[in-house]
Image (cartoon, rainbow, N blue to C red; front, side):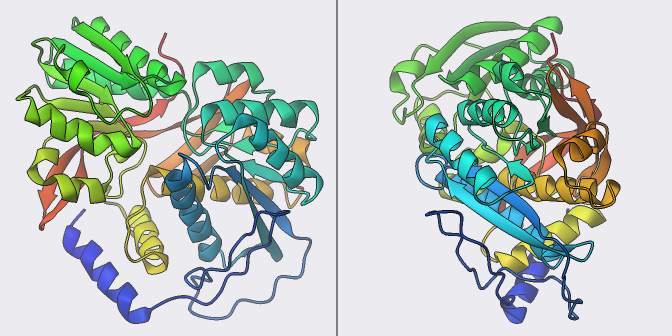
Length: 416
């Protein structure tokens, strides 16, 4: 995408200023704040919505280690609400959020509040896989069987609690790792790789997918390490890396910047490749400077994908949040809201769990990066969509993830 367009949008956003207020409804003791940047995207008043409200719940860790992800996801949710003027089919949309502190036990308690007190018709999140599994288990056994839409992918373990109500547009984490491994061995010609990842269910799943594809293509993983999830000093791990064509990594949060800096400080020169490219966020790239260049990463969404739908999404997002670009969190939140609204349209307004799930099981809807189609998979439903390989580049003085390859219309199932 031409970056001049993005900066023009940003300039326009600063001139136009903020939207009016979009008043959100509080969920129990968890307040849903009024944000002066959130409101209608329409330039002319819409007729007042008078029908039965549509009720959306977002269950996420607004405090704790997922706080940044929660905020960015909510920005995507609010962008979707602004796009439709906070109403759909003549019905007002009520949005409830709950802070589960990224704790599975609290996530179930918050889910119960959203279902029983706020009468939500769809659950968005949680992102954190153990919390997601606990919530879908509750929804299937005592939560009325309402559909749950994941913001990110999920690991294979969550198939055990899918209850045929878990909708995962991004599918299984393993396919994300698999496609990166496939690109590295087939397109880049890498034959050996070190692998280092945070010790986490997601980390194991991503790395397993990468290793399967890499070895299928004739490559070899020469070292394989998992590190504690709160690691910021990687010295003892970096010194054990072997000579290889590349170093696969999945490091997110506070460790991302230190890992890349320390990698270069130790004189390591093998190219870095990473799953979940958006874990290396643009503010961190600006701090790292040229150390962040030429990293290869895989992800479901990149803000620099150049097409009319994504350009419009980025424009509206930056009108609401001028200081940031949307990332995978934002895209996931936006897409989840639009999936629910399109499903309500397809049912003719019937928001009963059975009607929604019947439609959502095989629905196709348009997103900023193209069509997504859902399919049954084990006890859940997963998406088929385009998938991107990106490369960090310097564009008009800013470090950006730029798409370099597209895997078209991938079914995000386990590759084994």
